[in-house]
Length: 526
Image 1 (cartoon, helix red, strand yellow):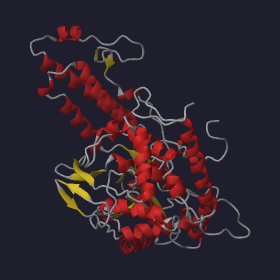
Image 2: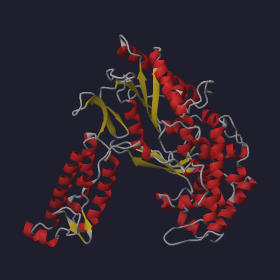
Image 3: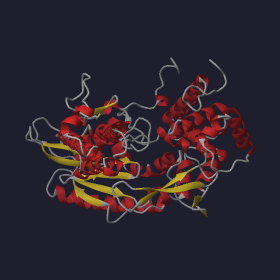
Image 4: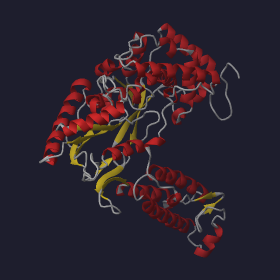
């Protein structure tokens, strides 16, 4: 086991194993202290941020990202830095420790929004040096704030996913009864679909730093965070000041956005995760059980119960009223009040505005969109009761067909079938893996397979216009390997992926794994 980092194989840069073990021990200590002491404030973190072991691990993570070939405003890529990694780490640490380090402006590029023709999303690309420093900051700050984040927050967090958020939502909307033999009822009757206008571009820096300083008061660390927020943007040769917002594309931006937007869950702490609310003398149960008891107690006493589900800047508020006359109408009025209250909270604390046209108050029995799925509470076909299911939106399957059709255009007939199948397989595998937990996914995937097969067939007819179908099948014989569908297109060892053979099953919350620093037992590398 060496003590110095060195290039290895295809990796641009590899940090030594002791660096990873050291960082894991530090992260576990920070997480444990933050979890056990909810009001503890960390005041000495600068030495951990600038430690060469932390910087080496940060460089490894930057070199492993998909955007490692993209340069910032200085034109330097990760490949150039990896050739002189040890020298780069030493110079960067010297700059940080001496106070001479200053973040560079991010290079802004516009990427098209999927499903919104003519609209673009701004993406900021920091320099490699800034990315390494941001990754080092995240390594130290993430365990501290992960202990404060609520279990209903799912966006850009380790161990969290879109499927977990949808399953958590489905569990909340599941019909329940409090007594044996009692008829099942919906615990929540209305939903507030939250949409924030330009969330990442308009977060108030002062409000964000106030929330950061509740846990971290190290002046050097906080000044570095503010420096990244105020670094500015370089767009088409013009420098633009950044007086608000966390530019998308930075490594630190998702963590800062979660720190700011966790204010939504804190408003409903009693019903979600009463960690800061001290338990009573006769109740020493964990926060999850106390939240469940609080929801049940408030519902029985006639109080409104509100539970949020958030993924990054997309959030839902589940509003339920106590059983009784006019239950549905009372829940609707409470939902309207919560919508207005959250709008005021975001405006006053973070300078954010809710979109009036996209922030809707919807009954749970009406299908609504969330995280690329349609969520529907309806009567189950097999049982005479209500059930919550997630469906694949028709526009998503239509969009996939359009992408398949675009790949098989007649002006791409010059490429080989091998290259076309590789592109199609990349697309089909990702789409089927994302929607394999949706209800009725098998039927939709089989229709996609049929469309993909015929689209490739039409593409081959364009590629070989004067060839008969029999000769075409002889030129591209199907694969005879076991496990492949009969008659599926195959060329040079690549077979068209069959989405219908993807295992379709409901997602389980038990599949989610906490980050490594949240596991207290055992030793690193054991």
